[in-house]
Image 1 (tube, rainbow, N blue to C red):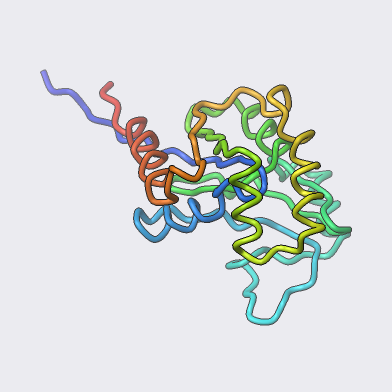
Image 2 (spheres, rainbow, N blue to C red):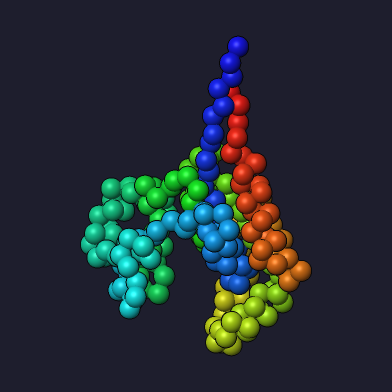
Length: 191
């Protein structure tokens, strides 16, 4: 009797407070393992050097609102007066999305077993140190940390598949490798 081997691919969802390392992990997942970030849609103006369909899908506010009405988004948010969202058609094999708590809940609510969710947990001291090191405005640092205390309360995180320690003693490379190892453990299933 012959057994068929089915290979299932999954999508990675990364959530975490400011300076928890999620964006750097997403970059390293791409560089080391070929996991690409999904392209999100926004109403903000394209900046110099940005490419439509690569950096973002740039659309008008009217188009974005029509997309909302048509149910095209997994999640969307208003940030700094502009709309941002990830569309259902961007969910694909070997993709990654960096998301806030509301977006995380939206992905979890899809009940898609092919989406693996991770919360990168780093304490305030570590995150503060990282924001200072990258040259963030001191007032914005305090504001982000205060906002994150509310946004990333345990009850606001929802039920993630994995919580990964991304504090100072956990390098971006170590966290990335751990995320990828867990991600690949879901990929091969025998039916």
